[in-house]
Structure formats: C-alpha cells, structure tokens
Length: 126
Image (tube, rainbow, N blue to C red):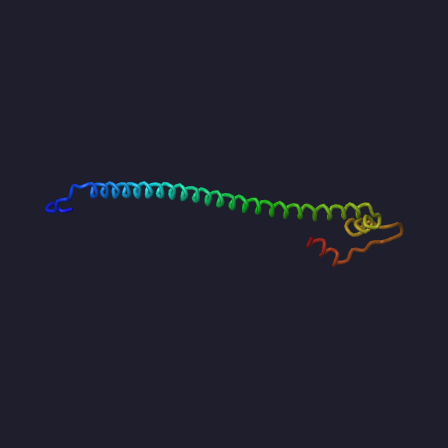
C-alpha cells in the first residue's frame, strides 16, 4: 500500500493479511524444501553416475587383463603342443636317425657320404 492510502483496520482485512502472510511463509518453506530435496537428489544422482563410471572403467580393465591372459594361455598351449611333438619325435628312432644323418653326417656301415657344393652353401647360410 502506498503512504497516502490508509488500510481499514477491521477484522476481515487483518484476517486476510494474516492468511496471505501464512501462505507466503508456506510457499517459502515449500520452496526451501524443494531446493533441499532437489539438491539431495542431484547429489545422489551424481554419486551414482560416478559409481557407474568407476565400475565401467574397472570392468574394461578386467576385460583387457582377461584378454591378455587368454592370449598368453593360448600361446603357452601352442608351445606345449609343439614341445610334446618334439618329445614324440625324439622318442622315434627314425627321426633321430634322420637328424643324425642330416646335421652330423653320420652313416651306416658301408655307406659313404659325399659333400656337395650345395650342402656347403646351405651350411654357410644357416
């Protein structure tokens, strides 16, 4: 109200003024509660998003580790198969005889081994 206008001091106007003041206080309280509730909800959402991000990062690292371990395991399995094959070959007399003839020029009784120029070139290249 302006300074020139005087309010009527009756009961109705005082009740209406009190009612309006209560409504304004109630609106302020509701706004304050909504602000606090909204802030709390926002904080919870941020914490949950951070937790999801951390979990995704750790899952990605675990997946990469698992893949590396699987590759290493496959490599070791391949190596094991190769070593078993070599072991089986070393238990085979024909294979040992072939290696002895090729690499060490061993011969059976009555055999003569001739070195050819191609053999010397192959030995020098190796």
